[in-house]
Image (cartoon, rainbow, N blue to C red; front, side, top):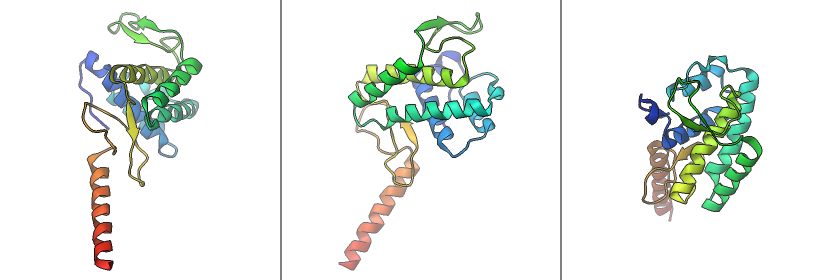
Length: 189
């Protein structure tokens, strides 16, 4: 999990929200996550007091995460946009501005109310960030790790060749395995 900066605008930037989305999708995909595990991710990204997560919240957040995983797994921009359009159409409210009764700077929301359930907030804020990334970059916002032993999602950052692995660790593990396979084939042949 990444460590987002402390200032409000940076903690709630599109890229940071997209990274929070990836971290939550990965945490929620890990079997049956404990409420404390999900709350830790939320706290790390500046959400206040996510201690009240219920079993129902986690179930609904896992369903939202499964839909968001489709966006990360998209092979191309059209597929990512289609998945986002479906999620936006089926699960979000109208675009609105909120300052949480003057406690934060004004910012956009797609959930139906400031006190929306966690899953609705997670899905709406994630769709907002991923939509902006697709719009801005004209490519999928991330991907799913290419390592056969890993299913983590990640946010693609910057330009350059497309990223294939969720981390350097996975990329190195796959590169070493490929090298060992090639060496074994040379020695056997």
